[in-house]
Each structure stands twice: as C-alpha cells, then as structure tokens.
Image 1 (cartoon, one colour):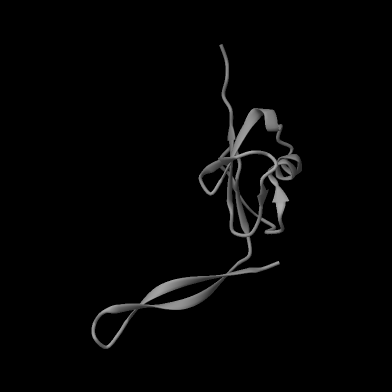
Image 2 (cartoon, helix red, strand yellow; image 1 turned 90 degrees about the horizontal axis):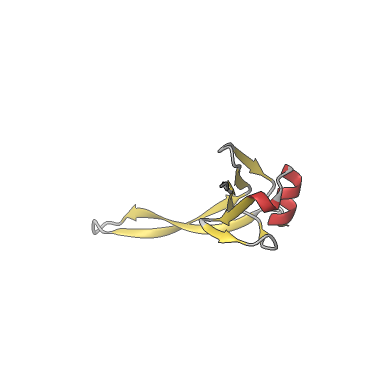
Length: 93
C-alpha cells in the first residue's frame, strides 16, 4: 500500500519572491531503528508496536518505543512513513 502526501517546494516567481508549488511524494517504507542502532526499512503495512517487537524477537519488557520522536504504548498502530525507534532499558543496582 502506498500513501501519497503533498509537500511544497520553493519556486521563484517573476517578482523575485518565492511561491510554493505542490509536489506529490510517495512514501513507501517505514524506518525501524533497533537498539543496536541498525536501521531497517520495513513494509509500510499497518502493524502494532507489539507485532513489530514480536517479529524482531524483542522482549517488550526490556524496551521503550518511540514513533516519530514520541514514546508510544505497545498497542499503537504504525504504518507508512513512520520512524520507529526501539530503545533498550538499562537497569541495575
């Protein structure tokens, strides 16, 4: 499934001012950043954080997950051009 978004690019006009013209951008991947800082580009199909953790073999009790820079719970549905970061929790005595 491809998701289309519209972004704007600056374009000079005859008066010397810049105007914004729409440009369609097709987003077709989800970026997954694992605890060891490796980056995977994955299928953009909707999935919960819990399913992604299961697929990667990661125990959800040992990590926190952020979507586009904000912490999210395991039941959060992610897709499209989301950036998912899995952060290992460090604990000890």
